[in-house]
Amino acid sequence: MLNIAILGCGRIGQVHARAIRFMNTAQLVAVADAFEAPAAALATAHGADVRSIEAIMASDDVDAVVIGTPTDTHYDLIHAAAAAGKAIFCEKPVDMSADRIRDCIKAVEAANVPFLTAFNRRFDPNFANLQARLATGEIGDAEIVTILSRDPTPPPLSYIGVSGGIFRDMMVHDLDMARFLLGEEPVSIYAVGSALVDPEIGKAGDVDTAAVTLTTASGKICQISCSRRATYGYDQRIEVHGSGGMLRAANQLENTVEVANGSGFSAAPAQNFFLERYEAAYAREMHHFVEAVQNGTAPSPSIDDGLRAQLLADAAQQSMDSGLPVKV
Image (cartoon, rainbow, N blue to C red; front, side, top):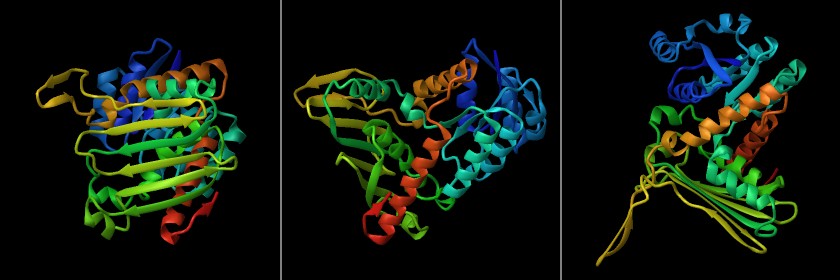
């Protein structure tokens, strides 16, 4: 039985607590949060203790920590957990700074502790199925990967200022997915962006509508389209075109009922929130982490994957700012 502590009791901490609750190979033993009320509520709901972060790091009955706190706290928590010999499950991004991520890599490697960067979309059943079939050569060699990622509504303006920008905050998931599907590292990136959803986002120094083109050394291409607005729900689609065919994963709808009448065919809207859209992915992600720690295998995505996605996000921002392609 793997004993886990959750650091950060907001909505993502609650998601991970629910995933742990339904596992027979792990249990939640402690939680910590900067605010008393959410920590107490989560602990009560799952039969765990409320402890300070310092106490969790010093606890012999804690084998692993889930870091779901704000990004600017990750660096210190990773170093503390590594020094304490805890396995680490860390929400993306590892840090907003590539150099600070490199420091975290050194700490994790020196301590020889398992580390998973929580890019949950790799664990989505449909996306994982697509990637597995692509890897077997079902459609030959991948040539063009297309990733569509659109949120129903933008986050609050107060968040925009601390998010790191659309490439580091939102598109970083898709940049990791591009690496996951391409099977090669991108060597160049070209990005464009505009503030079309809310002019205030532009005034805050960010964009809400963006697209990038990634190219690998062998010439494979990936196109990513992101928007902070989708009137029809949470839009998450992938298409891979290869030398022998195409693989495509469609949106998850609120239901599968379709109506046909004289006006045509109509279906339900896409699921409207990322927590419900990726509920299965979050559960599979936690199962993978626990299984890897117990079996002594390396969790994936690794902390190095976290760094590589961050470097792509940095390059995308540089490309948009300069108007030029950037070598990666």
